[in-house]
Image (cartoon, rainbow, N blue to C red; front, side, top):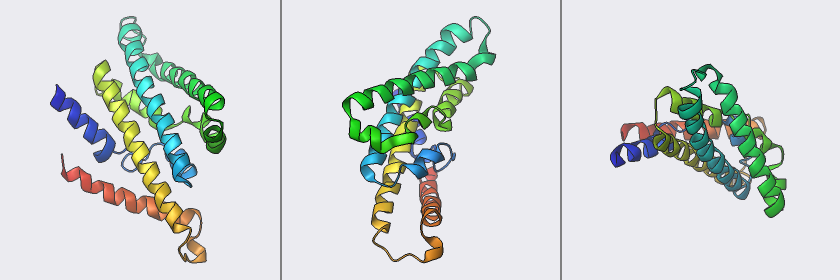
Length: 192
């Protein structure tokens, strides 16, 4: 059991990285990765939301949707759970971390519609993960998202001081960098 959880932990965070392998959650990945501090804050919020959403969605699916044969409602229920959790995170940051709340701006409410969060909940159901396995998968996926966004933010901060041709300035160089990161993360697929 521990070995399986460790494999899921490594696989979901590095090998099947939600951003660089599955291309889910690109909006906050590209939008919030301008500064490392902001990227780390977004990553922390995503870790909290995805991990808790995996737990709550797993419990609701196993103890409510399946027994009452309401599995066709899973997407709607998962979106409602995610929206409630994001509202909780938003209220917490607004009250206790105002600078991070302002830095994240519009991207914080976008966690609600972040397909990475919903993708994890649906993956947990499709792969028949139990509640604990689903939580580990959710946590690992969120850690992978955080690793990716922080690395891209660090690279973008360094790129500000480089001489980049005019046609590559802005989003083109960011997309090129993200593509190179995706290629680099493909190297992890040989580990498992």
